[in-house]
Length: 180
Image (tube, rainbow, N blue to C red; front, side):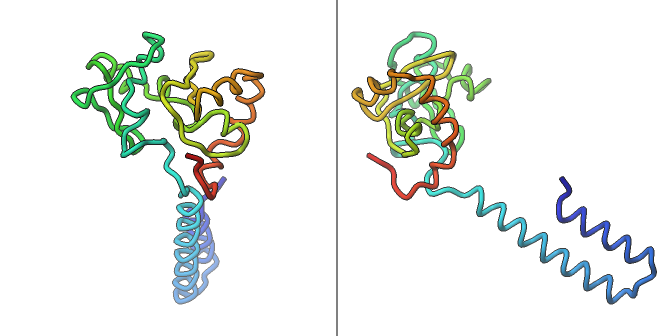
């Protein structure tokens, strides 16, 4: 796929090759630059969302829980600000330098699916907050949910819910509301 700037360059070179006037070339370049600027603004608007890509409370992901511990200890372990790491606009806390470094080397391996928003809600096309103790690691991925009741529902036909949530993500970041 060709970008607007490349297309503008090709048009200008073509006009020069056929001997059109410099003023016509300048007009084409101005129009091409304006088109490129408009396209760039449109792309920026398309990538902006109502809600951030990672769910946080006061800028802290997972209510301060050590995300790596879900995988290595199969447990909730509170993180410490001494072992903080910033990723995707969120502050992630860890219980040790080792866990912080593991996350820093491969954040997508440890970060929860759907930005830490509720997995069950994402399957239904809804955006909802989560609690750190409603979680599951399945097939090497962390899934969080809104409540322990939502977690129970999530565990019923999870494979289908994952397919639906994957189809809805990240479009639901533009939903009107965030269920709290």
